[in-house]
Length: 356
Image 1 (cartoon, rainbow, N blue to C red):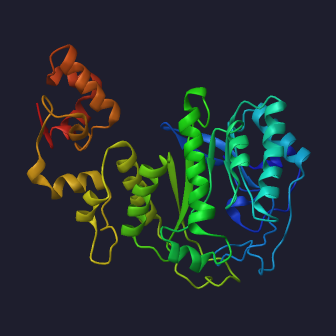
Image 2: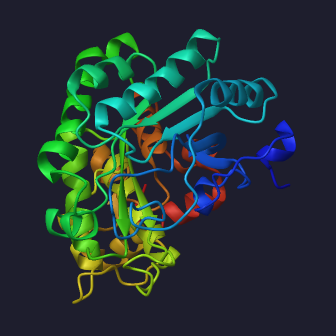
């Protein structure tokens, strides 16, 4: 069923220049812990002082410009939430003024939502160059913070977003401050959904560069999510004739991200899956491909393997690896015991790469 906001609320809104921010686009379905979570995802404003080459709302492009009024946006989010249509709210914005002014306006909306009883998930995308005091204030109201890194390397960033600020001082610094705040206050429930960023895929960086930067972001700033946005050419922009990014490429990058974040894979381990153009070969399942290519490391003995080794076995994820270790420590690990947890079908897959 198409979930259209104008149908639910009986109103229309002119923010329709880009489909991903379209008022009449279905509610954005985000994955969280294995289930889909409906989010109301919108921009605060479509007026921008920047001239990013890929963006429908770039300063020099003729398009519809509009902005939400605080009261209207707050009331609509609350109404959708109370109707059970959404579980969360994702708020970003174009850079219509200086970073402080934009983020202060975003915080006005977020604080109003919380004061009016909104208990759903909130993901706030900050502006490049957001000062520390506003990052700290935002962390008290939202579940996840982020700022878009846009590119995996400074050279590509400056090419596609020439006036978006300094890659190091305006982008990475915001991630660093947010990371430190979360580390200091995580026991207080601050930023429980973590810190995120976005990389546009298909406008300059190869897969190897994206993987290397992803590992850096995970290790340095303990990011919980890196979103890979497939490039789509927008008419009347400098990149309108640029080739769009394939969804398969993005899917492989997401696989690699989760393998790095949750399965202890390293950037170096992916190199065997990369071609001479520094791009992933067209594997459907990177973990299986890795196991097939590195047959000398398999089969892995489930009776003695440590946690990291168990995670390299196709069919075994973090929960199953922990369960195997628990069974080993508290009882006898055998096929019957493991099958009770995994089911026979998955166990057969596991035993193609492991022994018991």
